[in-house]
Image 1 (cartoon, chains in turn blue, purple):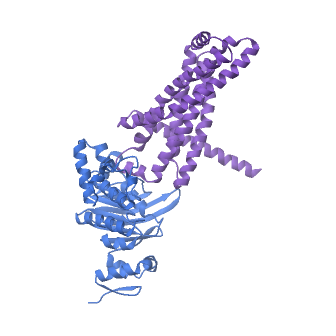
Image 2 (cartoon, chains in turn green, red; image 1 turned 90 degrees about the horizontal axis):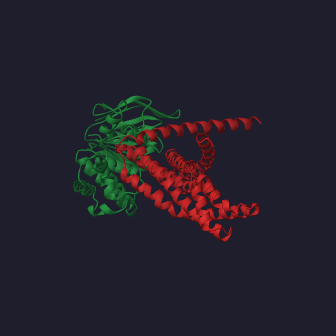
Image 3 (tube, one colour; image 1 turned 90 degrees about the vertical axis):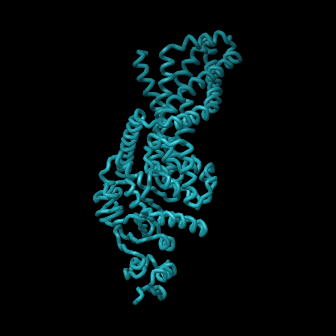
Length: 266
Length: 261
């Protein structure tokens, strides 16, 4: 379980996040929504301990990321896989070296063992294992994102996967393949946080939703609550995605009429 | 007037902050040099990039600079009737000053910009964060191999460059100064005293630290996407070039004092 407890974070005196508290239950997928530059990616960086909050605590399965020393933090990170924005693949390494990076650097496994794991993880995300010797720049952006997911899976012993804008900038076909990969991992029981401002993709994979606005948690709830919220700020953010919400409303047993989506009465 | 003064003060304050940051970064790099893990494969790759990759530039520039210097000296010494000192003068000028400075600047232009651009691009693409997330210390993985590799490769490049510059000087000795090559080379070897060799080796080793540390530091501190990386790369080459020449003077003074010259 991931728990944010009254977290405040600022850069150079500029407040980015204020009094953020939420939980992500084991095996669920939390979607963090919000406009660009609102601090969504920062929330993921805080979980990984890449940046430290000004105050408050972040706990992963009871262990504080904030007070952990470097060694403890590295141990916690072994439970977390991170899919960075744009993949962040090491462009001087092959696909195989990227996916197996953590094991090459941190484990005593033989080359053959690592290659077998790399091939398995590539298959899990729906990629051809024969891509192992390709360079990242030889792949499409959608394939690069899936390699990044495979790398997150092959690093340590991840129980949690953090996705930073995994579907941004993808064509519809790649988008579906990446979403399928995320769904597959969700169905395998992985706890996930997906940061996105693309609601249609979020609705496919999310268990519950959190809307960040004006540095704070403006909304938290499931798809039903998201679709039926009367909050004007949230509705304004969701307005461009009316059709997706209407579809979701149908899926979750709601009645939609135009932009207004209300809970169906029994 | 007030605007100029406040602008100068702000500039000076920024310079001090920058120097402090560089000093802290350098201290972290030196600490990391003695603590594992050691990325020997990366070190070998960086030694290849720095050494073999810069060899042709070092040799070509040294050969022509040696000839230019030999030509100048030959003309000047001929006028005073001391042309037989050409070999001696060449070895002092090349080994103590021209070789380290010239090759230092050539390598700085190539590698300081390369280090800044490479690390800056990695930072911009979140690859540095990815390294940290995978438990890798980016300073140990990216900076230490570059610093160690260049520390050993630049003096080697300077030795080879010095030798080639001497050959350039020898051509001028034979065809412009019209002195025998035996005399030229015996003058060269006679001038190769301990102090000259020490200066010729200490300078490139210090320059190597300057080039690699400033190049990597500018990469780590770059921000603002590709435009920011471009700006940092330009700043990196400029700072390294100026620092190299300032350090050259200061180092010469210190070494002369140590050698009681």
